[in-house]
Image (tube, rainbow, N blue to C red):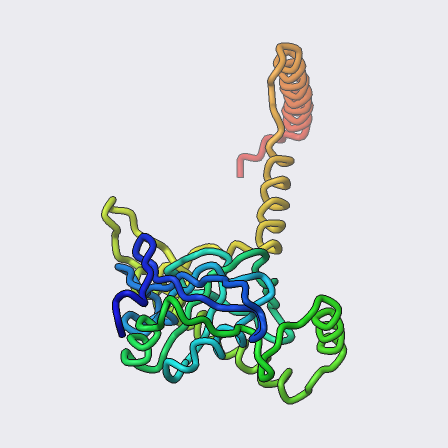
Length: 270
């Protein structure tokens, strides 16, 4: 293709499009190859195209149909702003994520590098309609009606599949966490500190609500038994008086015992 058909603005290539086939008003996507130092698994290098200036009324299907002419597309990701991190997409029934508002950023992941090169070779002078018979733009009322319909139309099979997938991902996450904790147990870090986990030989204290309540009750009971003795001077005086009184009583009792023993004493030579 002739280089004169390409328009670049700060490293991005301008790709014209119209809302409908009859429209003569041009809009532009700004595209370039997604190239970062730390790529995510969902956006592989040499296969991912970043698309800026995606209008609010366009969704994944519109972007998919627009770039499908370049080659096989694996996935389309839409975000509110560019990011190299992985994006967690919500399910149909659980963990639903609200779609980005306003103009968006799309990532088109192609099946191979050749399809990406075809996309980067698109003409900057020849426009294509974003809304087609296959994938037309939806008005606000139509989108609202479809959302309400999907809200009350529950497919048991899809729901079970989503639950199974969620639990499988959760189990995998927990297993990886346990594995990391076992590897860290007993190993000092750069500062010399040793991380104590509940999976190693020296198990840590479980930080549960029930355990914390038991610990607080035990501490409260312990403090209740430890009264402050002889804190004031009058307490010392009272304690001494009680001790003297007990000593006097014991002395008088011992005197009576001695007197009684003397009276009962008898001379027995044999």
